[in-house]
Image 1 (spheres, rainbow, N blue to C red):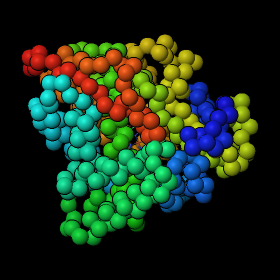
Image 2 (cartoon, rainbow, N blue to C red):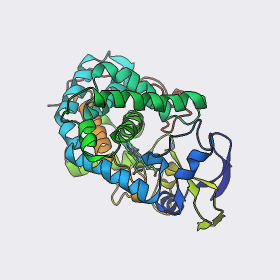
Image 3 (tube, rainbow, N blue to C red):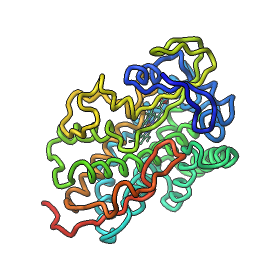
Length: 358
Ligand code: HEM
């Protein structure tokens, strides 16, 4: 455990080892609700109280079970066929030299989240913009981040009240949740930018440490590869924040009530005490209990969609463009700093004309 300053300049503890990060992510004595009281302590702007990311204990568990119940009514796997077809249509239209993020990862991520929630496609560009602002750490002024949350809530509230029920997650939330709009806004804000970053970072790893032509055909091997892509996190993973609800010990650190603790999933997923040869990319790595989706009561509720999205997005590239290559040296890529999910701003590639695999 180290003493550091948060990205917005507040003193905090930083956990980087696997054991410490797992504890910080799952220990109920480390909460999220108190972070909303201190504007700009871990990010620019304050997240609204009463959300999944700003509640603890029973209040958090109640919201989480409402969300999971809605996800059971409208599972993300129902998107599989449409998602695959949309990925293929995007790849059929990409210019042979283009940016993988703007021509593929971003529209595909917005399709997944927009379709799952049942949002009209004409609203998707604005939804993507607001989601990126809400998920930023220190890219925008506090007022802009706070206003973006209100705009998302207003938008989703208006949509829900003005349309009949559909077979989508928004309608499922209306059936399961006391207050469906904040939960829908959380799915939109967390789901969009994380999937864009997931596809961009995983593609970068395949382009630099593996080969699309070697995409596996068995489901077990695909799942192992996806887990290794999530663990490897070429840009260092994310920082997750907590506040100590009581005095407690994490690793070598005595943490006082009220202190901020950040958990760095990237270094934890490269901890040599937990992963043999952690800096080697091993597509067939077994027993890969990485922390990319968090741990414990706050384990990512969108992990099924994330794994399905990554598997399909990368598989469709492998089938159509097995010889795709990065068009610039990896160290010249500009990284989207100030976002909760670091990713390349753009990933210029040459989509090779090699015949698609059958
Ligand atoms: C590759 C993509 C993704 C990654 C790496 C990821 C990662 C994470 C992590 C690490 C957490 C735990 C945060 C913490 O402990 O503070 C989390 C929570 C969460 N994620 Fe994801 N996520 C991804 C995709 C998604 C998607 C697609 C959705 C929704 C559609 C989603 C919805 C959520 C929600 C709602 C939570 C909060 C769960 C709770 O507090 O009960 N995530 N995610």
